Length: 445
Image (cartoon, rainbow, N blue to C red; front, side):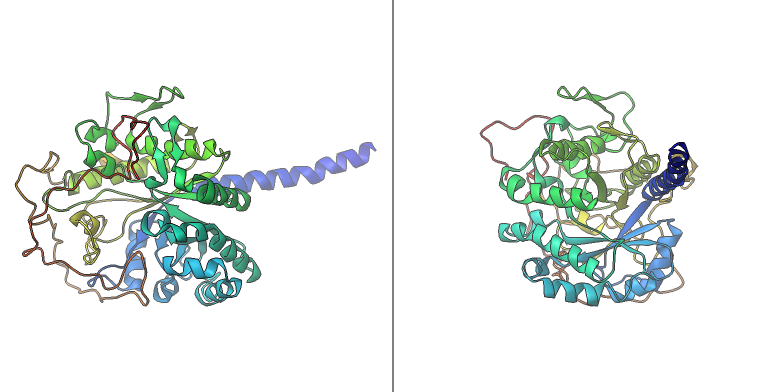
């Protein structure tokens, strides 16, 4: 019996060591910061050139908003891990049709796997923000179908999820009061969390401190949104947790919302975050200085594995938005100015996504911000459009191969010279900030 007991210890010990090694390796991997590679521009570099630019930023992860074969082929044998996306318009059909799901995976994932390191597959993009509620209820069934299709095709290393914006919450202040909206909590979010928990996947969150700050710059200090606050902290009265920046508050509000539904341990992946480097004349704080400050600081935070007050020391894997300024994105000017690069491939400001470059090591001076206060003009008539320095080589234009609902192709491009004057935008109802709880009777959605 003693001999058998000792043998059991000998068998168990290597397994324990292997488990520790896998866990350590996973933590080291997930602390790397990736980049979102959107394609809504008529002047963007080719996929092969873009992959080289992604490498130059020292990104180890990339997220695309489709399964563009030219991009996926360009990513072969690069060691860059990839997130792909199922188009929003296919969700309803796939949710009730396993055969269609199998066909989609066979056509869009299997041809590239495993030579292209596809590791994440998002079913739609911000479905709860951008589609009608009939699609909401088809989301989780579609996620289940896609997961089954991956398994049927022998693809076992791909996590399935979907990206959510902050508007999935009806309350985010204080963070400990984070609560999913009543119209989606039971029928959408709880089944989704059950699926993510069962498959050990992630809650993919789009978190942009720029939007709540720009909606209420009086009550939310700019430094607090940029990770630059030195003398201000916020203590959550419900949890006692102390916050030094707006980003952590936003993430923890979602963590507490998941906990409220009985899922305290689901990992969060920051699917998008960033700061605009330009925008319309009435859009506050969108400039190169703030964009560089935010992105450098958020990279420093994410690569330090510091976690958030609700989950200290826990890795937050992430994708920065975005690779390029995309000149054909619809919406206000900020939508076309989230890039780290100009379309010609030059950097808008110095940035290193590996986190190895310290903030003080960036040497090139940043232009001073001129729009950090509220717009005081009569009407917004033009937008700030930082121009890149000229390059001797012209990059090849590329357009997506197929329509994408999140990136409609081609979108209408407004003539900024002839637009009718518009009033300044109202506060964004999808970001329940400033730091005052809404009246009990109010309905923000």
